[in-house]
Picture 1 (spheres, helix red, strand yellow):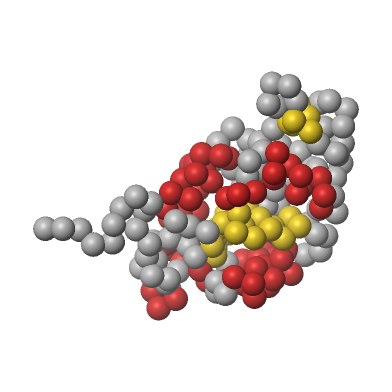
Picture 2 (tube, rainbow, N blue to C red):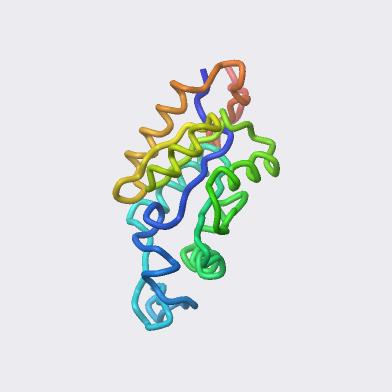
Amino acid sequence: MCHLPGLVVFDLDYTLWPFWVDTHVDPPFQRGRAGSVLDARSHPVRLYAEVLAVLEQLQDLGVPMAAASRTGETRGATQLLELFGVRHFLRQVEIYPGGKSAHFHRLQQDTGVPFAQMLFFDDEERNIRDVSKLGVTCVLVPDGMTQALLTQGLEAFTRSCPPHQCPPQRPPKGQNKLQSD
């Protein structure tokens, strides 16, 4: 059985943060005096509360991550990933308009990770439908990314991954592959 995906992919708008970057906020973004992130009108913008914990958990497990977004506001989304401290978690970022299937074909091509070894989180049912047709395990995110949804996704991935397509398992960060007797 597969225990961990070869790549976990996150949508951005209403998955990692509670807004559409192309309509609900005004780029460019900047860091405020207290370390907060502000849009061009000095309104604060934020991630969902558990996003950084989710990313840190996956990083500790040694699971590569990526982002895939259909937004036309590519600069603003990229800037937010940097300002929120999220970009360094992501092996690859696909941010451009179009169907999510195109994003996943590019991710598969560039990473070499087969669709069956990917896990995807998104807030839009149409994206879940399109990407699941590729063989990717998909999880609908109704109210922002949470640790409970991550657990649900990892369990769904384990149930759906054919054993012959499983990548070799990596030990959690800080653990050796060989244990002494």
